[in-house]
Length: 191
Image 1 (spheres, helix red, strand yellow):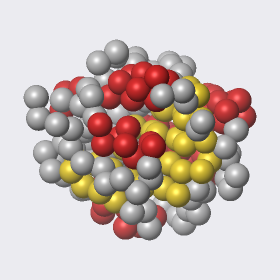
Image 2 (cartoon, helix red, strand yellow):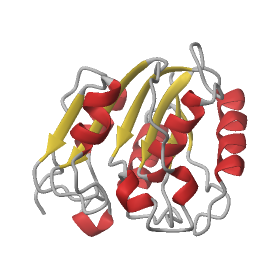
Image 3 (tube, helix red, strand yellow):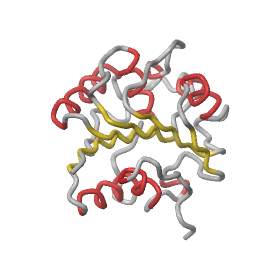
Image 4 (cartoon, one colour):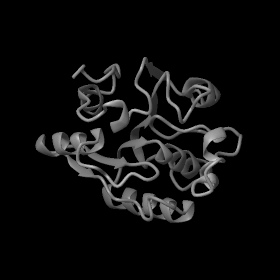
């Protein structure tokens, strides 16, 4: 079975109806080892603490699949840039709805999560998925992250921030991707 590490974003206290909880439950029901931790101080996160917790979680799980949402995408990219994670730490990574620097720097609680410019060599196979109308990335995730970092990107029309506000509780496509990395990430089924 595969080990999964699922990482939430800023101000996310892992509500049970969020797609990340749904995904955790489905993967565990299939017999996979899933770690979905509450990161420290989700409302006023400290980047260094989150980096240390990420490293600790990877050390516990071994090579795994990482699914990061929102501010945890920035956490992951900082971890790569600083050498906190590297080759051998993960098999693949899904980056979901990263916020742009223009938004992040406007919030003192997460301003330190804004990424410096530079070249990143991402470990494992990495994919990016985002909504075309994400209010936290008005410039577009493909423009801000996909193109500059060479990350294959899938843009979902009308998906917002891929959170509960956008209707993302159950999201079968993300489960299918976890089980088969060639799966196309599509919108959740209509309610």
